[in-house]
Length: 338
Image (cartoon, rainbow, N blue to C red):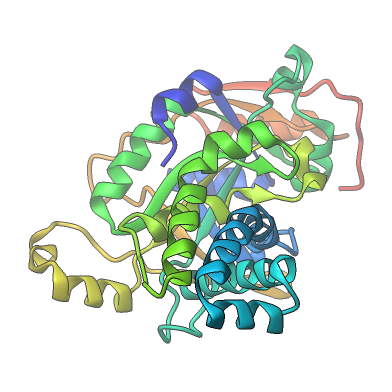
């Protein structure tokens, strides 16, 4: 899980672009909806890292295969049958990463997914100038909030809410972190170096005939696969909450190994279904605290560019009455279609 202090130091505020209906719902409920990853607008969501990891594992596997074939005629014959060291390493890497992906996110291995991620997206406006931070990013207005609003959250206060959420419900994992975009080598190494070391160790053990399953494997896999995206989305500068509620099947298995789970005052988070237009979407509610809810750390609401911006600003004031939230207007001269 990313260090909360680093997240706070890097991003003092986070912008969440939403519709008028979304803003009204967030203000009234003081909750955030995290949507299942299959409902997001990236066709390679959570799967884009598979090929990247396989490619990064190949040099290590080539080295191991070369060592093993020098010690074993059986390994030498198997390598030759696969088309040589290079091709064998490629096949082994793709199959190895594929098995881990399937075991984590699909029901093909255990009969149920180990983790089932839900996501809330924010724009960090990292490296943007004062104009974007004050008025919002035009691409975000067009894509996610045409005729809508941007909600500005205090990052550290949001993290503290997540800590409470994690104490009240079971997650594996619950995190707030930067999205890593394809091609950003520095960010990849910073965020995923532990996972790469783990996978290399597991792959080596497997080639030597041993199965290794490190304790933090699934949480690290979920954190990485849900935060690696195609470079085409880089302009979004996304920071996201990744919430993977513990499913009943996983909880039951853990309970057999850890009897004290029954004594912990936590709940299993239940997903909900709601129709949006022609599509029925699955989501979970974050911060649905039963008592002593401190409220969402919303510091500002930006009224998006629109021909009826005065009416939109008045709506925002009515919905946020008594909450002490600053209401500002974007001066980006975009009219849009809504």
